[in-house]
Amino acid sequence: MTAPIFHRNIEQGSPEWFALHVGRVTAGSFHRFMTSDFEPRKGEMFKSFVAEKVAEKWRGQLQQTGSSFAMEQGLILEEEVIPWYELEYDVELRRVGFIESPDGRCGCSPDGMVADNWGLELKCPLGKTHVGYLLAGTVPADYVAQVHGSMFVTGAVRWDFVSYRRGFPQLVVMVDRDEAIMHRIGETLAYFYEHFDAALARIKAISETKP
Image (cartoon, rainbow, N blue to C red; front, top):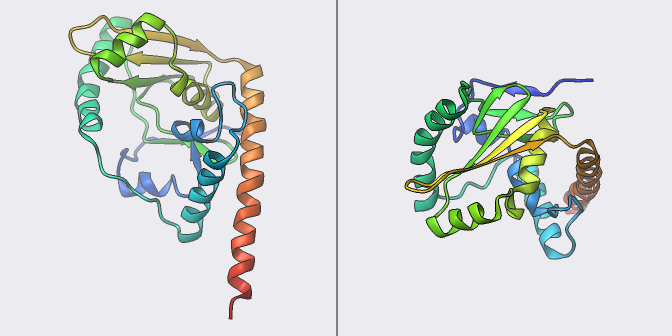
């Protein structure tokens, strides 16, 4: 089996990192075309995401959005929670800029890797959101596709979901690889790219027929 491609020296948020996202779906965007049951979404949400990725591929450029205050706080807390996680679980996290799936059609940007087969997804939400996560004690529905999608991309056997908030107990949910889920993700990705490829071909045909 072909191995995933690790871009270890690319910094997340750099121009090179953004370039790797162009026309390619990533685990963090799986929820936009895939439900938490790993089935294709229906209706305009699915169509809009296909159109977005086709537009990126056509122009060779990713549409970048500005950072919100919450995102900036998340980046700050990331520098706090990673040392906490390393101490709590007696591990050393490695940073990886981007990881491509073996076929190159999807990727992910883990918040850290303990080893090539064990990754970390870190969230630093508002207090009320964090409390809700703590009470549920599971991976929130909004991030289920991302966690399992990261294992699909990398071939990892474990992915930890961490919700961290200063002054609160922390939530760590350890998720094991499930081959049945991997199969469903693969089918849904194939469905997405069937529509993506058809839409891209249609745009190409339109461009070639215009005077």
